[in-house]
Length: 390
Picture 1 (tube, rainbow, N blue to C red):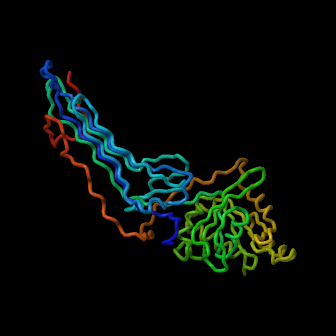
Picture 2 (spheres, rainbow, N blue to C red):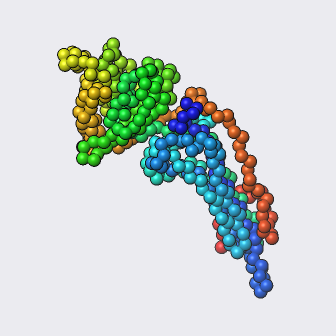
């Protein structure tokens, strides 16, 4: 997996911007004695924002950009001039990306639509200048608010592939072959287990220029929900599918038993997966005759099922019709994702190939001021409203 361009797990460090300090400047002009305070407010710090991008399919671009830092707000200045706000940082991610706190595993947010923006970390608010604190009894306040501090957090971004139909089955069940037949996708196909090491996406063309998205999920084995094989890593991609197409080869010892094992692994991982619509496809049916199909059909689960052969094309068109009917069972085309309840991430199960990088040094200097008159009172803290006296 180290050489793969499909990256569905990244861990990054994010830091918003500090708020700029308010100014303690006083107005001084030749013919205006005692001009009074005219210190401006500090600028707001930049935010860290997640934005969905439908043109992205992986988190590869974040693998080598581990530190995301927003700009700090600048301090205010005289003549009621407000400091410049810090630049916000927008992190473009594929639709279907979920964010977790890297320290606790707490679920933070979910980005599912193109252009959707979620503020991960809010920038610090700029401090108010001394002009805000003048009163009838204190006409020359020599203090101002400091800016609010930045927020920082280590974030885990997890991609859950968006697709209408997800292929679920044991290794060598014919999932990749089916995807290559019904779409233009070209997954690796070979006669050994775990040929597919990462999810593959294909656009399936249907009648009257209609289409839907199909995802080939790496093979699941018994015990995948406990971390065996590759299943634990890729089971999360099934959570986003509107419809699950279970594939069991016709030469299986017990088709019904294999289906129950697959269903049990999904239930162990996330019980909500049992609420999804399901179809059973008996692959490699070109080796069966009509009598065998009738005999096998009598012992199949009570869900929509169909016998297919990707090699000969047997019942492939009928399979598309069945998938389309199930996707439109509610009277309208189902979306590519379902609303799911995200559980907190178990940090112990998350592994990263890269070592932790040192945090960047803070380039913000609290003593970088250019006001002529300033007397900052450290006991004065931001956030407290001061009313003008009348």
